[in-house]
Length: 487
Image (cartoon, rainbow, N blue to C red; front, top):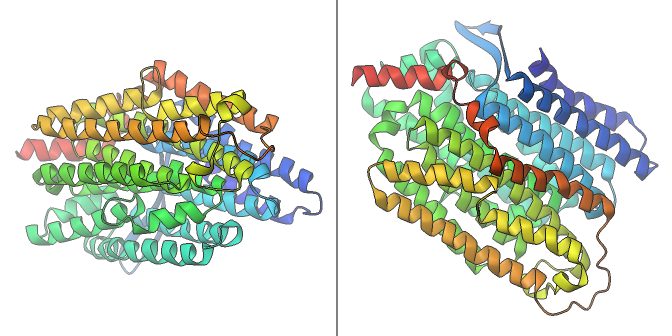
């Protein structure tokens, strides 16, 4: 039942924070640290246990059987762990990033954490997944509205309209398929889909894919990303990039591919091409940015486009590589957002041309920022290298070596804009501001990010092994084997 308690705990802690006093900011911060640390400890324990799964009947209505289940294995398990880690670190960095309202931030962050955990654990029942998939929009919009920049109203409207509109095809498709199947279980839906006309199957495949493409985002559904990431407070931007965007990738892996495996198998070359174009386009957009938040936002778009392309290779080894890549991207992207926020606090600007020679004025900051930037390029001994190597191998083996070339070009773009960012932040002109002291808590909080990037880069076995046992992935394996037998 540990997995159930992990789902409930963030909401309980949010209620605890709401009931606590807000008169003493330091006391609120200490309480928030404890509340965000508890889910991380549970998620880590679940990792060492090898995962957990529970199933039960929820309710029946008009002939529909709606179930409740929590699936904590493989990609689900690692995304939950990443969520708890980054929410814990985001709250720590919020102390210096936010001038006031630390209690309100903790309350909303914990609710957001609970909804993201719920989405990642909902890999078998569609109604449950839809609930958490939609619920995460509200706390995110509230956080942007409360702590965002000068254009936060526009950012809230853009974010809400895009994400809600993008969810409509998924909601309609889910309602149709659940009504046909008489159940929201993924196996029942997949079996029912096979009885429908091919044109109908393709139609609902496109509907599901659009919704997850918006959440990721994938071109051309990325217009909300730039303003949302740039206007959100830095701790929230780190969560958006490091965790929430991966709910879209998870949707492709846990729902689109298992249910519509035949359509993905038929159109895999087109899907890979589309995802790679999005990855390359995101890299080119990042190269053109001077706003550090937008640069990191489009960098996320590029990396996740490459991850989605890897999923469409329909290879178990590449699936494991995608999981490693997502964990690595979550660590490096969130770390860069945290430390870019520190630079903004020092310089009062998000324009990289206004940053200074922090390599000489603050060597500790420069060392951490330089390491994170290099890790984002996925050099050997970092976790990103392992993930991207396996994804590129899958693209090469997909039948068109050209796909691997495009993937390599995306990595070259990453090197170009990250080295440009390093040049401006670490080796630019000496800044006029003298407020360039790195708080001890900020430096200490960077230690687990750096340690995990190196640990998983040198020893990715814990992540890879979670995909080795086929009994832990019955949804994907059974449906794939069924199609292969028919072929």
